[in-house]
Every structure is written in C-alpha cells, then in structure tokens.
Amino acid sequence: MAERPLAWRTVSTLVAGATPAPSMHNAQRWRFRYPGGERVLLLRADHERAMPR
Image 1 (cartoon, rainbow, N blue to C red):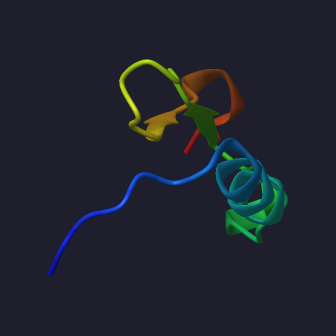
Image 2 (cartoon, one colour):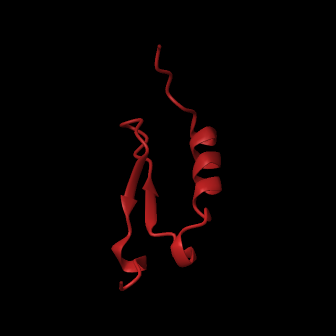
Image 3 (cartoon, rainbow, N blue to C red):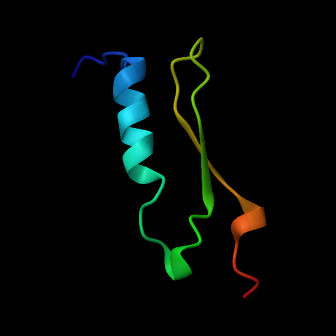
C-alpha cells in the first residue's frame, strides 16, 4: 500500500473532529501537533488536563 501525504486541510479537519471527542469526564487529555516539514501528525498526552485519579 502506497503512502500519500495528507493535505493541511485534511489534517486540520481530522484534528478539529477529534479535539472535542468524548473522553472520560470530557477531559480531552490530548494535544495534537502537526510539524508540516515532517509531514507527521503527533498525538500527545496533556497531563495538565488529566483527572487526578
């Protein structure tokens, strides 16, 4: 299967849809980053939004 880079508009649409996605207590404990030069979408935990327990 050949890989194709995603267009910025596609990435933006995907992230916009995933950002408010339901999570435990609606905390959305994630951050997205798209360093365009690397053509990689990064998904990282946002520990500041994590529930204490």
